Length: 548
Image (cartoon, one colour):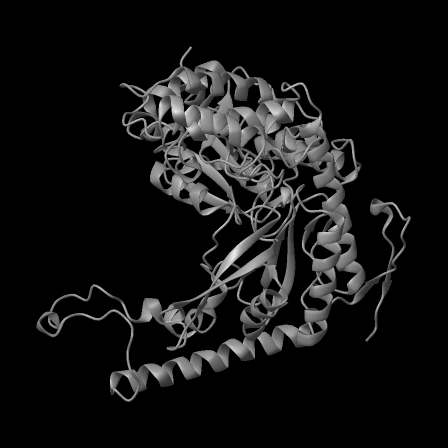
């Protein structure tokens, strides 16, 4: 049976009667009770989101306010040519046309982002492994343009790349296999999968991915972003309802918008918020007509790349089953990085892959390659092969990239005859636990789940975004700093990504530098002091309240 017939089936007649509402409330209470009593979890689920200190929040708002005032002042000076204007402008002969460049829309970019632009887009000239080499650059016009100095900064410790299992490397089995395939097949395919671009290597990859995920079938795509943005419109359309986590990735948001479905957003990882939307959707149906929705699709991620949080998947699946909705799980950051065998958040919670209707992920992080995949029932994959824009119109994946994925995946699965993959998964878990614990002991506010290799450390104030990135680079540590609008305005942060390629010596060196810079910039905001203990189990961390 085609997926269209399965996914387009109605979820029952819409009902607004008192009896129906009471029944739905009973279902909600049952799911909530089970979650609160730990019946849905086979392991401790510990996440931390310490509240922003009031003084820090006030000073952060004041900082953005001052920057905004000075931004308007500088715009006034540029308008009167007192200050040189570097921004894109309409030509004089087009001044009566509708403006192509909206000055107000770019206000943040030219007046706030430009001040700290040197903290992003830094060019590297080596493999982005545990360390990398950085091309030094400087600016003589306040970051509007950059010039290369000719100097290369060697052996910068890499705390920014998504190289979770360390497969982004230029030596070893993956690099050798990709090189051999390049010699045999070349780099480009120059056709789509449906025409002349379907090679045996593509089919081998998809069979291997399906086996790895524990699903009936899988399909590979050349771009991770397009895997979401081009496939969601094939699964949902007008008359469908998409329930999306408020912190979902831009690719999920774009895919939902392109689908033409009605979109409703629930609070991040908040099962009560999701449940209320599900209950209201079934009780009231579509707006105006109150017809039942053609289908309800829940969009969530495995690990949220800005928060470091892990989806409460057992609860989501319980709600999905109770309300007969469909689940789309994006495992871009969790596949390879979670679970004893690296099979992602589903394995992490000990769940059945069959309970997830659409399993999506990317090969860009743990596999050190490019592209994405979708796994699930065979009829789902057969449907997408003929209905997905990304499958029909996009050029096939490059064969060296395919071979990189195949080799790294076999290594993770142990099919290469070694335990390298298993040991890397274990090392990543150990590095994550150690790094997070040490940062908390130092007094930093750290977001996310204890087992997430994405580690956001809060900076808050706009001036400290650029300062932290620059001071860390001076000490040969490469980090990623993030601010508004990618995060809420008072929640700017540094985002560390831990890798299995990091040695304990590297992490200790990085932690010492982070502590030093933290003292310099006064970043140790936490009001909870973690009591350090060398032999304490990670999940038994104790806190004492800090009144200072």
